Image (tube, rainbow, N blue to C red; front, side, top):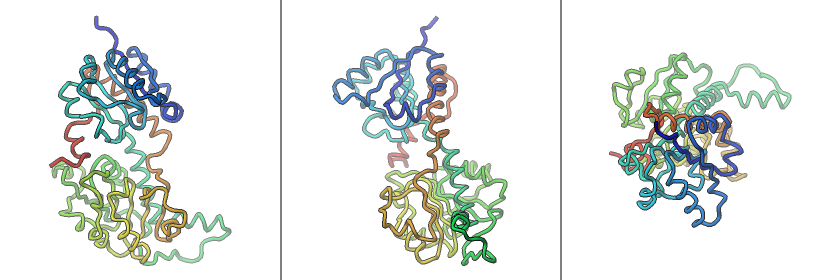
Length: 353
């Protein structure tokens, strides 16, 4: 009978307080032995590396609490030689492996890399849907009016913007990854016409989800009443929502951004909102936070939120519990949902063809 696995659990004080849950730790404890490390508290790099290496020599799996590496040192060739029993590296890494972990090398050695940042998708997609509805019905301004002692004043003046119902709208999704796929599912009861631009998704997969493909981002923008940006920032997506794409949006269109401002040529976006040509709900900015005197904060055609799309207690706890669950499953050679492939890593590194 084989020995129970050894889990090296790496977490700093903040992650322990905010993100880790007892049920996640209990999953590991029930399956094997847990070595608990707080590497981030060690200010001496040599001490941190020596402590980790000693634990790594016994580890079947390394689990890092959300978010980031939590003080994990790089997996150098010398460190890989110490990791003879290692079969899983899991955590919520936000696809940031450059400089510390070669996913292809891990996979070559039979080590599954699990990144549960995508398990935050349901929260982000729900937030995107909420912001679409906020734009369509101008809910924040209506709430502010009541709180300031006012009330409705005749018909709602939409000023030529797309407004009112979501049902039947033309929705353009930039990218058809995990965020926009979930958003498309949430919008299904509204019977919208959904189109996307994503060169990494097959035609068969889009047809199966009743989504059509646009030939370009500019074509997608031109056909959209509601335009949702759901792609991550990679070297290949920097300012991919360019001036040309933003200018292609019809007058009165709605723009929703829930990933990172790095993918948007933001001055072109603010030019159109200031001109009253489009309205936008934006959860991410560059820089963050925007300066106190930034006109973005007071532009009546912008609904700004402080980077909250995926930031819920449930989402953070889910990231950790899923990391623990999938670690145990991977060791048992059971299917997992959030394993990272070398191709995934290449896409986020901007080197995928």
